[in-house]
Length: 279
Image (cartoon, rainbow, N blue to C red; front, side, top):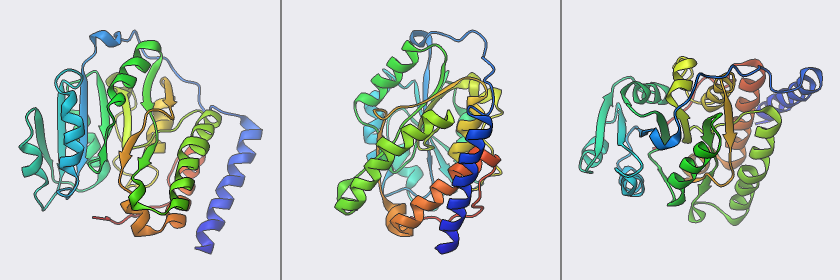
């Protein structure tokens, strides 16, 4: 743990030095061509899922209520599951299940990108639930800002899954630290809660499947930022489980995420190369 915090301290100091030396954003965005108005856009919802039989039904209960009015399609990427994930998802009207045998979050996200037909591609995790205002907000944000190519926001964790102190600290991070950091650096994306224009994802070549897990969302945000506006909004949240916090430990997980955010933002590569499943 001491080595981990030493690495975080090193990366933070490097970040501060680079801010004062070069400022942000690190790259000047190149604008995309003429974009379609939101009223004419179609929206695909993509849900990567590996062995999510305990969560996928709750996720789809919250998502399918917006089909087909908002989501033209809902795609569950069955990422090498060995449980009943595909069976449960297939029972929902309007849900298409696609099998991806290469295990890994980025393989699943990239497969969803290739399978989806929408102009806007929305991604949520299988252990998440979208609140009623989520679809209304994404439509409003993209309608109000034609330069917006990606919208993301925080996780809201279930209170019963953590202590009162942990809940307070996570809220401080997501609703205080994360938005401020995004405004300073110029970009931030939560991997399990974002919507991006297809043209923007195509412009950057999709997802970087060489990344195992940590740092993948910052990698995506940094590359999207080179072609347009990436916005992180406190109000654009999804409800998510706190299972990785419970499994890995609150302080350790927070340090790992912070380390990989700044490592990817500054050095363009994540620091942590491996991860473990918390199913």
